[in-house]
Length: 393
Image 1 (tube, rainbow, N blue to C red):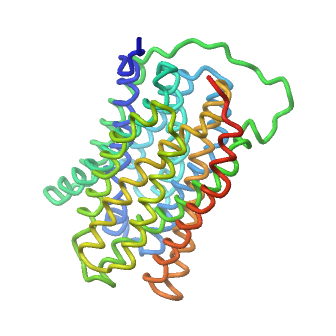
Image 2: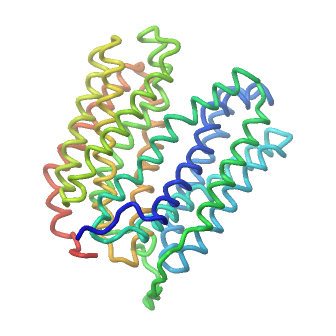
């Protein structure tokens, strides 16, 4: 008899994950406006202030995986969620640009640790026979918050122009997530103390290094897209108000593909799911730059959403599948490290290429890099994973 997937604790963890990402995405598109209107910050200063969040999250990821695997996971989860919640109050209290920059940067640390801790607890409360499928569904809460939160935030801002209200709303939603996670019953497991000297493998799952390179290449592409989409649409295509629609279509693609891929993940077809997703993404990125019209623009959003929705949960399952049960936190943090690093490189290199050769050249670079990722997977990564997969971990 098939074990029950939608158990009470799994649903609670998904609700908490939705709340944490809703609070995050509610403010994300509005913070540049806030910094400009409230403090008169210039574009370069805004970029520096906001990048501190990503840098802090990237730095803390390896250590959070180690902590989640080495200490009581429920306790680690609650500490991380509390600080993530509390820092929203810091935005309300920050009266100068410097104070806001400090709060924003420090906020990235509990966010980076919390995303690792919450997803690891989600894996713990899933029945072993439904784990791959459950990990795929878990990402739906991220996708749903990505689709709804920016829309809600922009609507409230346009109706009220009140940033204080938005900060309070983010604080309340994060508080709800904290309360929900507090009620989750995490299975008690013996913490295996590693008596060997600390090594890199305790902070980054070295057995996943080739998969990490692969996911970094795909994250590079999404980093360029998410940061330069609006500028490209305006300067190259003359689209001034289509960014919200683009990301809504992308989120729909992500949502649909998660539902479509659940069965194949449950049946263990990880490499097939990853392969299909990355090919769809490659077609989407190429269509985006090769067809600078409405069909190419919005069609690419659906294809990239469908592709990433298949590819990312498959890769996450692959990372978990090469880790022992006491390394799940490290596996989670490892894929997030690779993703964050790729996003950062995409933002940096995409900006340099755009400055030197234009935005069209930057997006052709994206297509080439995505193609390299597809080639690497079929040439090496797929075989590498199958040779290192741990059965019944």
